[in-house]
Length: 177
Image (cartoon, rainbow, N blue to C red; front, side, top):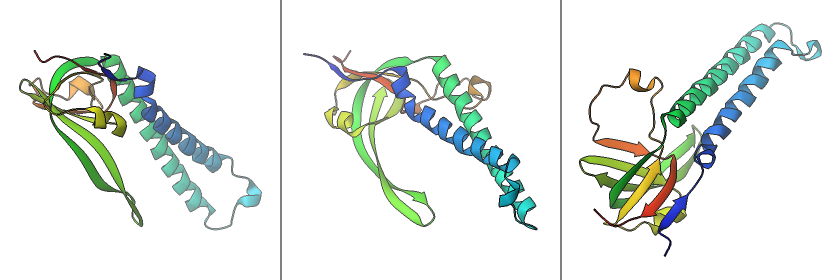
């Protein structure tokens, strides 16, 4: 019997981050280039300066968001993965509103609430993996703990009692210790 429920490479675990960073760089870089190299035939008299400044500022903000997300992702990856043995306490299907001001839709996340000793960890999982997880059963999760922007420089050295993780590379059913 194979006890591995989920397995992914580090690339697969960080794929959403890569796509988002690429989107920020593509849109931000494209807008910035359009601001600089806009053809004169497309320019309007009067309002052109304000439009270009606005587009340039928005592009710089997107580029900075891409750089910051890349920095945090690389920092999280370089910190390394962590393997913990946990007991599943609860499974929750979390529904929330997401979208823009006039385009609301509902998004569903599948969360497994676990504990290991005094530490509680929530894992966000794909639906098919979430459905396989059983309550009051032990699992070994290998994941990349989330890091803040400046990592250990801004965090106090205390033993945290709660953590939330979504960059998971392996889930295996194990016997409880």
